[in-house]
Image (cartoon, rainbow, N blue to C red; front, top):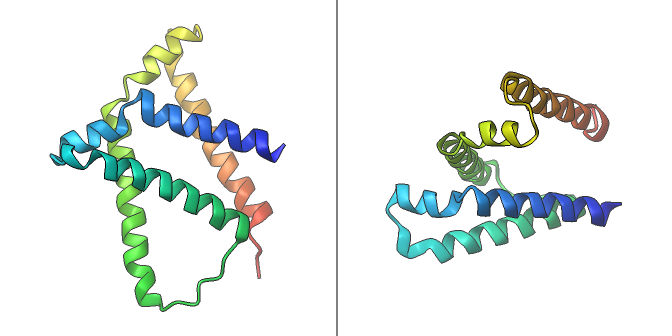
Length: 131
């Protein structure tokens, strides 16, 4: 079950980056096209590090001052990802057309939003220990 879930999520992540062209668009916007391989390796290493960290549940015995830049870089990543999504937001009408929800794009967006909300609440309630 875990392997199948990991393959599904990994495939979705790769499809997201490939089909939407997030990395080439990011290099185009930042005018760093010559560094595209660095971006690709950063994504691969980041994904592997995230997988290892979620499997091991590490405790980092480091200073809080080091966590500030770590949080800033995480925020930058999420911000750049959000910016890339807004660039390619025209994917939703195409998806709605393919799954025959032409006039109900609001329904599709609400399903995505509510799924994210309920999934986050479930993770917070079930997996995060409360003291």
